[in-house]
Length: 124
Length: 325
Ligand SMILES: Cc1cc2nc3c(=O)[nH]c(=O)nc-3n(C[C@H](O)[C@H](O)[C@H](O)COP(=O)(O)OP(=O)(O)OC[C@H]3O[C@@H](n4cnc5c(N)ncnc54)[C@H](O)[C@@H]3O)c2cc1C
Ligand code: HEM
Ligand code: FES
Image (cartoon, rainbow over all chains, first blue to last red; front, top):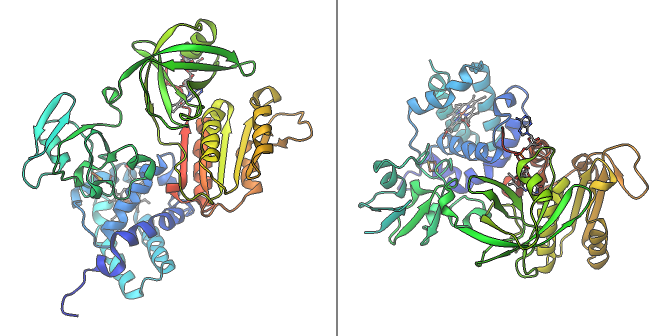
């Protein structure tokens, strides 16, 4: 291959995000460790936000900054969001990709991207 | 360059500028977050012109059919007239004459309205009906545009309810009221005619389900259609005869009346409509779902349906939220 494909392209781009969003969101809602953070919000809007999350984690095009991540999760941090919750989200993300047959080596890269936002998400 | 019209103002789109940037740079308060077409926070509607295909990517088909689009990824070559989803101005006021009023049971009134101007709607959408200029409420459409001459509403009387009380006690045939609309994205979309459909409604939530079902059947839907209508007591199961009739007429339509109170006669399911539905049909993979009525029922059922395998894009719902005092 002469041109290096981006991680996002290797995973399958927007189509992969669309395939992953329902699976991932179902996992999150079924995960007792974190589902309280996703209660009582408009499910449709929530699913769209999950899509934003997945696009970001897959290395796709987005305009979020670290500051956006801080602001976007501040209300959750004040409700007790901590490292264990980030771990759970990254775990659910990995399980979703495995279900879709994505290679382990790509899953590790996705996890690394999510990992890199940890401090911003937790407002540290 | 394309011109973007919003609320009587016109803005010229600059080179490589998105509709969102064009509006926000001019001080229009459009909410946004990702600015890359994924979070749907910036959702707007084109009331004139056609939004670009790219700006409708990933939206539910009931929204794209109504010209909703994401302005953050919209770079149109031609003019657009746009509105925010909550802009009342996006909908014109239409006067309508009350043709008839008839009780469907003790507390649900069938209201028939003749519009003075053409109104383009789909069965299952809702209109806003105004008692006076600043007092309006949403009511779902039970009529099917190509089958019924007039708009049909099912209005349930709420204790001390302002508008529903006025409709029941004071409105008279011949009177003219103002309506706006239609709105809402809970309706039947032709296609996928063999898909299984489940509809769950409580109380007057049956209004729009009745419209949706008749629309689907008339448009040749052949997949199984299961309607679960719930009420506390027998009196609440209105349209019983009509629905039984429809069941006799269409082999793929199944009507399951559900009673959650005591004293359930033979021929009725015992329990709450959504519980019975999930009991009878536990796996909803590839199903199309319609959920209408009591807000708490809709919220809980939406989530359960999704966890039972229904795809988010296949879940259509309207919660009959009453306005908070
Ligand atoms: C999308 C949508 C579709 C809808 N479709 C339908 C439909 O098809 N059919 C239908 O019947 N309804 C429908 N509704 C509900 C409808 O829009 C109205 O909310 C409903 O008719 C009540 O309006 P109201 O003016 O009669 O009652 P309101 O005056 O708004 O009062 C609502 C309730 O709150 C109580 N209340 C009001 N003020 C107070 C207070 N200070 N303290 C305590 N309680 C109070 C009243 O007693 C009443 O029971 C729909 C709603 C939505 C959002
Ligand atoms: C692992 C790193 C994480 C990343 C990269 C991330 C990313 C995002 C993104 C991009 C959004 C959309 C923001 C918007 O456009 O408004 C979002 C929203 C959200 N995130 Fe995260 N997130 C992470 C971790 C978490 C964790 C651990 C939780 C809770 C357990 C969480 C809960 C939420 C919720 C509830 C929303 C929606 C907020 C709202 O509706 O206002 N996130 N996240
Ligand atoms: S701002 Fe996220 S879709 Fe437009």
